Image (cartoon, rainbow, N blue to C red; front, side, top):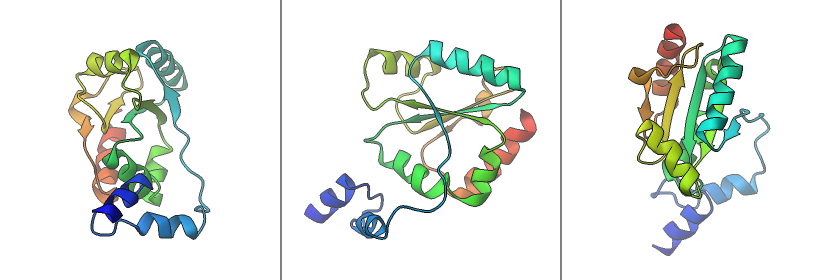
Length: 156
């Protein structure tokens, strides 16, 4: 139990190998560049970012994330860096709502979309309207997420 707590506190995301993240940290940081998510905090921030994305003619992905969310960490470490996923994500604007604090602004943003908590991923078309049928909640493996992104990009 103690090993699981230590593993979770150090970023581990798999209870059968709680200390694996420590081994990865000891090996050094990954060489590949992380995806550049623009952080937003409020609905006003989101509206501004969607207007900017619309002016560039690109669709948008909004990732609801929290530091305490284990499934968010799994997506961040396992799914988003996968080359196929990364390539598809490069074709849209990437926004991230960090709701770690769960303050009034975070709660208001989540309530706007009926989100109970992270992880939740919303997609918007090129004009800034949410594609509700493509909304994701929970963890998705790279292959499944990649397939979903292809459908989203076709619909945008």
